[in-house]
Length: 308
Image 1 (cartoon, helix red, strand yellow):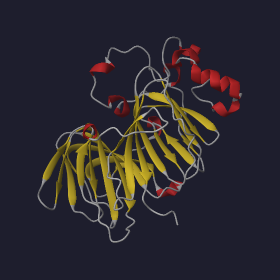
Image 2 (image 1 turned 90 degrees about the vertical axis):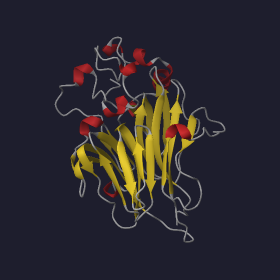
Image 3 (image 1 turned 30 degrees about the vertical axis):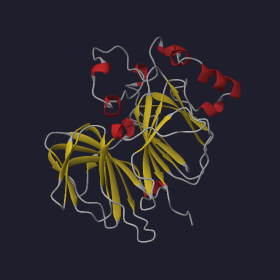
Image 4 (image 1 turned 180 degrees about the vertical axis):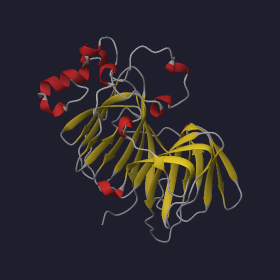
């Protein structure tokens, strides 16, 4: 079944057929349900907050929910998929009343970390290590960001902040919030100094994507002081990447909305909101959006530095 075996075992003709068929017909064993559906529910997902599916994911199809040992998570030499049922939360070092789950770390071969932070009542953040920059994106709830200049910013869902390395700051939460955070050791060039940025996704313009159909927003400036960027990419059902990418950049991805198929190396994976992906340099990668709703993912990408 598509739910738990790699597409690499199928013929190329069958693979093409699967991609062209509606999602519901790909999985006849599930009846009228979609892959990401957990069956009938009294909850109307259309009334839920933005990114609700990413923070309250369907862990598996109905008939697999109680199957011991089942997971869609995969870890290989040049890529990994960390799905919600595999995420392990524990107290974050130097944070108060906050649980974290590390999704990507240098132990994989990455040069950055990506983790979820679940802030609870009266929680506070710690600082990154010396010379480490931080990017945070609010998935659920809201937080208060304060810095050494005594300025404060309230960050609701879909807000984000970039904190340069060694900048004093604190994140506070009175009730609860869920953040996705990226950190990496800053690589300086020509004594350039990036600036703190606080904004929201909807304030960023749509950028042209020649030869592609997806919608793209870049959350950070493209200028030389910034050694990585965060992209928000939107796909309508049936849309896909035109370029089958193979490049030197590393990626960390969190699917915020929707579902689809991701190719990594020679394997093809069904993914849904809440899944995280690490892509090493030069791993072949490609995405197609399936289902009935928009796919949106948040993507880390290192930029503006010579790979030497």
